[in-house]
Image: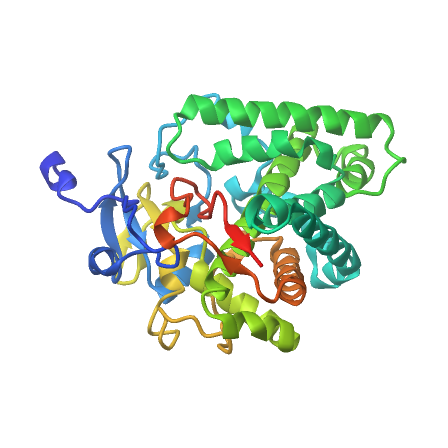
Length: 407
């Protein structure tokens, strides 16, 4: 393809400050991007295939010929990465394929099984109660993000991992730098190095006293590191991934969910009056909001046909979960939010071997947080208009910087 032809391709991701926080793309953008697999131009100048239909997304994400390894030639990137980046992403198994990925993932599978998440629900309830007490103490008006949505999942994942919550300012700020796709690569690299250094020191302390605690990192030290099954760099990479993903995604989902539900008081009241509906409503919120909007990145390792298009070995693909979750062929009235919808086919957590390992925990946190918030603050309202909200459209994980509320 010539350079002239490439510059005529649609650019991904698009920049549109006027887009609704509930809409992955506006009507004009949808005409350009939604539909059959199509080629787009990335910010680096490289091209990639954009995959947006539900069936095509599922087919690609479960196909073993699509790699998550960003070191492979042709891997689609939104910004160039320095060569040192490979050193700082060791152990983050979402960047690995096949047996290498499964080896690390299986060490965590039992921890995040539904039965184990049910076991820690009392912890989630206590943490929600504490966060709601802090929100009440802050007084009306308050920022829901800093007083409730962000502290809640941060405290839970810190408890599970054995990370001191007192360090939350440090790891939250570095996490946001890591996820900011507009920052220069060297700044992102520095944030990753700082987080790895912090977590390496924490792991070293746990290795020095392996029997003192029963958190996840301590157990992995005793059961995997000491027998030689898991390297220190791999454990640090695991910790980095779980810490960042374990608070950023759920925090943004809580804030956006509250913004949406309080616009329709009857739907917000359902959480209080019919909490048995909350689990289904959470799935619909995950489908409708789909906070990973820029896409999952893959590169083909062999020629594969997806949606009638041949993606050749060495070509990149951008997989759009947010648009797959608005596929009219799968969901009736896909652009409408329906709290009674059976949305279990949504792909907000991905699909295939890389599907989010922490989804049972995220679902439990969302369910408990939203139900208890509606019970404690039935008259909660958002005090900022749409144009006044600070939206994190530059992040890999879409969300809000703040959400002013009153009651």
